[in-house]
Length: 402
Ligand SMILES: *[C@@H]1O[C@H](CO)[C@@H](O)[C@H](O)[C@H]1NC(C)=O
Ligand SMILES: *[C@@H]1O[C@H](CO)[C@@H](O)[C@H](O)[C@H]1NC(C)=O
Ligand SMILES: *[C@@H]1O[C@H](CO)[C@@H](O)[C@H](O)[C@H]1NC(C)=O
Ligand SMILES: *[C@@H]1O[C@H](CO)[C@@H](O)[C@H](O)[C@H]1NC(C)=O
Ligand SMILES: *[C@@H]1O[C@H](CO)[C@@H](O)[C@H](O)[C@H]1NC(C)=O
Ligand SMILES: *[C@@H]1O[C@H](CO)[C@@H](O)[C@H](O)[C@H]1NC(C)=O
Image (tube, rainbow, N blue to C red; front, side, top):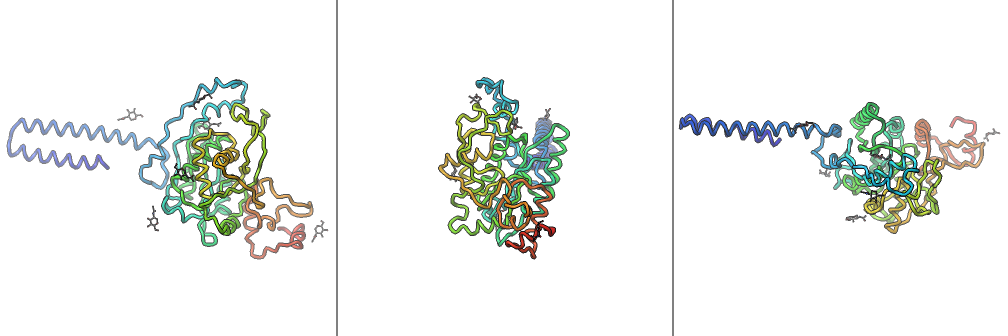
């Protein structure tokens, strides 16, 4: 834009010079004008090249063109901390833990996909009652598709807005990575619901993903009332969540709330072959603070922003749900349990009863580990007008087809 304007001014300058030349017919003037024009033209040329280079740089601009956004490009490449290898016993640690220690300090990564207007801009973000932030790896296309059609669909529910973002990093090498990035681009073009950063989307980077999301929320959606943070394989009864949250008589999001499946007195797993293995080099204490298991938890704007604030001064721990607990503890806040959150699935008392009877799921807030097709069936079943529940109805369901 600037160069075009300048070019315009410059051509006017040249014309002026040309007229002068006609009036005065002095070679000196002619020469200086010519040289001036030449110099300016050269400068324009260089500037054009430069601006071409910078506009070419961010290859993955978000589809809806927004104003150039520092946030997207801000991060420089984060250098690996090679002195991590001096930590005692480093060489005996599994590869992914070594990797974690090398890059543990990295908290800023370039954004590949953004939706700055997701909440209608920061000022208007209080129009969003419940923001669903769902951790999803690039290949989990089917899960996202089903969620968009079911519990995560953006909608006006009981008079308040639900909005959704899927949060993602990158996976795969070279061609596969490119292909999967393309997939997310396509999805974002169609649905406007993907946030993607350029970091490796691995289990041990889930905390990084969480912190990047909280930073994003602080900037783009600071005033949403409540937040559901969860995985893409949960069944969340978002109707009930809205009902429950609206029913909190003294909390509109401006006070503490953090509920989920509450866990306390948990020790770090010290067995090398476990997925959750955390050696003393990563976490020294032999107790985790109280936390809610990571399948999904529901929190207020106040609590989410407080956690974000605390995270600045707490070293990343690879286990994301425990890390949230550490942030809460530092802020002097407590997570709590809610009966409706069932991370381990429902405990149906009798084999005669169908564990997937919609009557159970009609009442819950959140259940962990559902397959995409199960989510689709269940969401439709619990919304059936003619769904009859109760003791008798439940037992009848053992031989009718749901
Ligand atoms: C543009 O970028 C290329 C490659 O990054 C570089 O070789 C070239 O010198 C740059 N040109 C300018 C004008 O900055
Ligand atoms: C690099 O690792 C060493 C050893 O753990 C640590 O003392 C240091 O603070 C780390 N540096 C950064 C920048 O995180
Ligand atoms: C916020 O909402 C008002 C009223 O709907 C609108 O005029 C304004 O443009 C919105 N602000 C942003 C940043 O979108
Ligand atoms: C986390 O992501 C960064 C950036 O892609 C990567 O360098 C690092 O190895 C990842 N860490 C783990 C433990 O996967
Ligand atoms: C977080 O920190 C910022 C700046 O330090 C402060 O303005 C804000 O009130 C804090 N928010 C919470 C919820 O603690
Ligand atoms: C449920 O299953 C049991 C055993 O298969 C059967 O006896 C019973 O008739 C079925 N229906 C009801 C309503 O209990």
